Amino acid sequence: MQKTRSPLIVANWKLNGGTDLICTSVASFLRKKFRVKIGIAPPYVYISNMANFLRNSQIMIGSQNVSKFESGAFTGETSAQMLKEVGCEFCLIGHSERRQVFLENNASCHTKVASALAAGLMPIICIGENAQQHDLGLTKHILYRQLQESLLGQDIKNKRIAIAYEPIWAIGSGKAASPESVQQVHEYIFNELCTIFDEDSAKNMRILYGGSVNKNNAAQLLAMPNVDGLLVGGASLDPEHFSEICALANQITPEVELTS
Ligand code: PEP
Image 1 (cartoon, helix red, strand yellow):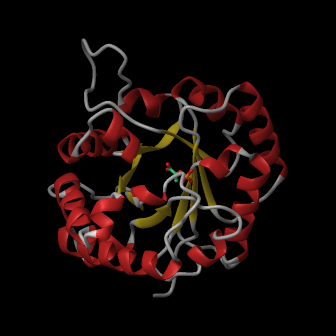
Image 2 (cartoon, rainbow, N blue to C red):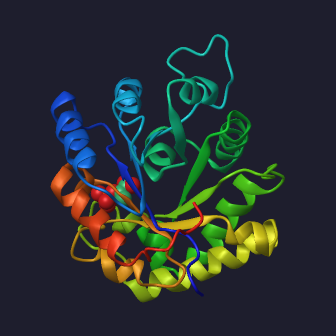
């Protein structure tokens, strides 16, 4: 499949980083020009500052989570509307760490996706199987349920959505899935998106891969026809390493203007 959009490379800082990382990242990104789309999801408290620093750059700021509630007596929550107001353009939803540690599920993801879309944020919905499910050959079954239960019935007219395929066994393990297996899974996800929505809508949704991405495997992963970008955890905490990954993505992005 001919790629018609520039890749999207997203950094997930998780519960890491601080003023030093922000300063070095911002300095590093403001020095360089990229054709690829880049997103950074820092911890909540840094979002507003980073969005201000990077206001006129090509870097999007996003959040690692979003509340399923709009407002009210929900201590510790942050709504999609608030995130939008402080400069977020996207939010991660259903990251495996949220599912495992904070007991999020497909139903809560569905509500969060709806809130994000209503507020004008691009949801990046994280899906993926664990090691046992992988070994038992249940990957497609798990992805099918995650996609159906978080996406069916969403109002996506004129909205942006991305999916991040993140096999849980690959996250933080140093062992990324092979590019060929990622391609197969992404093709499956694309076909499911065509069924849930329609082919034109599916073609407008990027499918990212995440799980031990680094500068040594990024180019091979991005070379796969159905890989539209990367979600990077550990390697994104080193600004030079992360910008090398972005530079690799840049190399495979044609100079002609691609749709965003
Ligand atoms: C992640 O948790 O989203 C992730 C991709 O982590 P890592 O790159 O460290 O495997």
